Image (cartoon, rainbow, N blue to C red):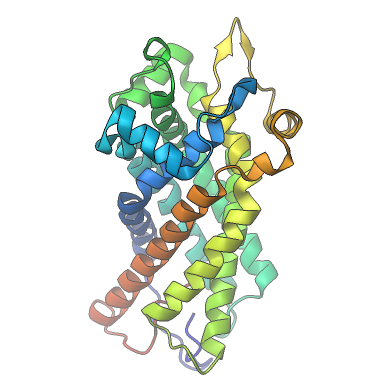
Length: 316
């Protein structure tokens, strides 16, 4: 929400359908750049699972190993799942957030931080439910290359993954780990969307920033760092649950809490932030690119479709 908006003259609102479309498009555009980092993050989080020796001690070691074994394009394994995840999860969460943001804004004034966090959690929970099938496909596809050939699932693309999971394991498996996924999404969105809105609002209140791409970049970087620190423990629980196998009818983990307890006991407390560098390297740029793409599309739509050039991106 631009600081220059006055209570007496509010900007013309962008239609909710367009907000949903722009949210998903922005997320998909960002994924094209950061998919390799998502793959590395997943491999790092799975490294050391089951009491085995860590396969990757550092992010650079993971990159070197992946390129050597799977080739340069191996870094883009699971891209189709990553794009579908954004098309479902981010479309819904960004659309719900911006819609609720406008609803609770009073007389052109943005809501307080607590309200931003609340609507961020709500948007994240709804988006995560719709995005879980693509999420579980993404986790499995990015994890496949670390397994022996005989144990690899070998999904050709996200649609092959969805069909085979449904046929081989049942349709409900597409929502395995839905609860920790929703939990992670609530933490991520409360931290990411609320901190972005708050950081942007603060920057605009200073004399150094206007509602432009530099402000969006700075607010995104702040948001990315806060979100990374807050969400990593729930993310590692989600990743391991969605990648686990059921052996003789017995799953490897009973739930998210069981994952966290076993990780701390077997690998140490700080293993909950294992892969912090690739996680932030992925989430930071993804946050930056998503918000920049979204703000630019909002500005373009306002200026050239609604013929309203009085505001910035609006809605965040």
